[in-house]
Structure formats: C-alpha cells, structure tokens
Amino acid sequence: MRIAPLCFTTFALTLSLLAGSSLRAADQPFVPGTGVKVVQCGDNFEASDWRYVMNGAKASHEQDGEQRPPGGRSVNGRWYEGAKRGQPDVIRRIATPPGGLPGSKGSLFLATKNSGVPRSYSGEQMQDDLLMSVESRLGRPIPVSWSPSCVVRVYLPDFKRWENRSGASFGVRADVSGRTPDGKTEPYWPGMFIMFRSETTAKYERDFAQLTVRARPNGQDVPGPVIDEPGWWTFGLAFTPDGQVHQYARPGVGNLTEEDHLYSSFPYGNKCLEFNNFFFNVANMDDGKTWSTPWVVDDPELYVIPPRGQTIQNLTRRGNEGVAGRNRNSQSRTAFGKFNEMFR
Image (cartoon, rainbow, N blue to C red):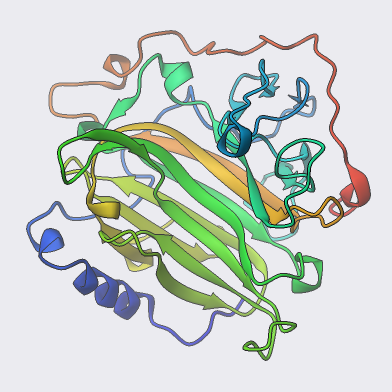
C-alpha cells in the first residue's frame, strides 16, 4: 500500500502547531491501545454464528424526529443502532479480506443504500451509524480521567467498488460529552473520516481517498494524508484527562505507534469529560438506488489507563452480560443486495 508522499511525523507536527497554545499547556498524547483492554466492549467477529437483528424500520431522528424503537442490535449485545440516524442496511459477518490481522477469520461488513428517512429519498448525502456498546455494557460512561482509547482495523476496497461520488464515505468516531467554551455540558462527536475523491469530479484527475480529522477548536475539519492504494488501515482515538482528543492512523494492520499521530485538539473548543460510545458512519447519496462503498472493519477494541489507586474492576457498574440476548428471537431482515458475494 502506498500513501502520497507525506511524512506522518511532519504532518502531525504541522497540525499540532495549528492547535495553538491549547496544546502547549495540555497533556501529551498517548498511543491508542495503551493500558488495559476493556473486554466487556469491542468484538473480534470470530463467532461463526455472529448475527445482527434489524428490528424494524431504522431510526431517522436527525431528519424527522422519529426513533422507531426497539432498534437493531447484535445478538451478542455488543453493537446497536444509533437512534439519531439509524443503522446501515447490511450488517453481517464475512470472511476477513486478504492482508488482515494474523489469524483473523471473521470481520464485519457494512453497506447502506437507504440512509435517510425510511421510504423517502432526500437526494442528498446521508449517513447511517453503528454503535459499539460501551456505556450500556459498563453501566456508566468512562470519565476521561481513565484515558480511554479505541483502535480498529478498516479495509478500504478497490476504488472501482467505491460509490462514485466525491465526499465523505466512512467515519471512525466517538460519542462523548464535554464542557463548551461557555460552560455548558453537551454531546459532540470527534473522530476521522475517509473521503473519496472521484476522477469524475472536475478538480480530481484520478480516484483516491483522503483522511480528514474532526476537528479544530473552531470546528473546521483538518485535511489529512492522501491514500492512493486500497487495503487495510489501522485507526485510533485517544482521550487525555485534560479533555483533549488525539487521532492516529497508519496503513496496514500493525499496532499504532507514536509516529502515527495525526492531530490533537479540543474539538469545537470543547473539553471532553466523558466517553460514551465508539461508532462508525457509513455515508452515501440518499437517492434510493445508490449503494454506499462496501466497508469492512475488524477487531475494534477499547482500552483504559486506570487512574492511580484504581483497577479495571472499579470501572464497571454491571457484569459483562450487557444487553446480550435481548433480541435473540427476533427475525433479521438484512438486505444483502448486490454486495452479498463481494467478499466471500
């Protein structure tokens, strides 16, 4: 895999300087995956009977105020539909694409077609969300004093398989709450996006992808590395006790290192207080006929660094059963469509 000529260390340094004085007085970033793994959360998709249950029409609260409960969930209780935007149309376990983590036999396939209000087409870019259960399985959000971090491997398919549209295609993000510059406590959603730059768009001479980071303290996204070849990438988000968010990425499936640091900031000027969930966005043109890019993720994991005098047992307020089995007898209605055989 090749990325456009760009030194990750230089890139990270340049972006850190853009963050201004807030970084110079803030905690140093740490590599996502540092500390103790939270086994109640995350997934490796190795169970051959892994299954997701849709549970009726998807939510579209962001568009029309409708959540349409009960909402979709995985049978193992580790994944659920976002009530804000709804879940991707296809969520299923597949064989791990070539070049994945050593020993991995299963990964999670995500694709969507009807990303807006059910039975209605906006003709605009929309997105669906799949959330990794964290707060519901632990019985509480994670305070940033525990330095939470998430790591996931994402498979970028050949560019000929991408939705032929320049714009956001996939997001790796966190659901957090923080203190705003005016002292209020509000939710926000920092992370990273994989953008597609299609040669059919006048200003691009070739197909390629590009990472963008959300966000600068003023709320603007930060342009990141250009990706000229598909394949596996490793992404990570880390949260330091000072409320800062740190983004990391590297090509391949190797563990993240300090050299993979992309950016650190207080997104929107907010100071993060609690980590609630980790989630994926799948975006497409909501026209009733255009499928999103087919995405594959593997081994999303959650880690914490217990504060002095604390252990991982102090973090949870319930057992690791979480919400598993709640919808075990429901009928799954996933629409595999033309992607049914894509990664067999």
